[in-house]
Image 1 (cartoon, rainbow, N blue to C red):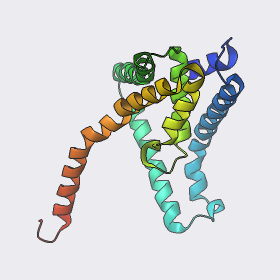
Image 2: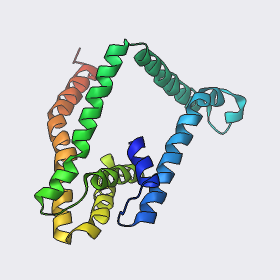
Image 3: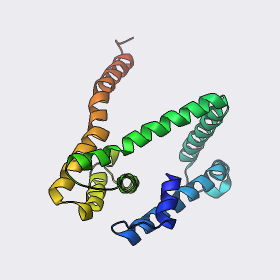
Length: 197
């Protein structure tokens, strides 16, 4: 992702809404850099007296979560190099396949778009969907992708591509996970009920 963002910002690209896309990518890169730069000192800050604006309970909750995250990261980095490389290769392959779904949906709908453009479209739309109040960024992701595809194809083609892309990349995940979620919820409720034990 970092390489594609750098290429889009520094290379000779001819995207639709070129300035808007470059500004959004630059803001996304700065946001990620800011978060990564703040994470190491966040545990110390939240535990210090300077974080008085947080109540005692919220401060302890946040520190516990941050320490759990840090311990998990440290445990992951202590894995053998071969395991880490295998994880990197498999996750990279997974995300390349997942981010190719929109490109295949565009082709299936009869449109024409560059694979890199569909990749950046999804990346920006998924980042924007984090500001949506709906689960999974529903609505914001579809609007973002549809708006960025419209300059390249007809409205009906863009709508069909977005529907197919979201069905495969989101709704099928929900359908596959729903039975497991219901089973886990049933077991938890049965365990917590007085007669369940």
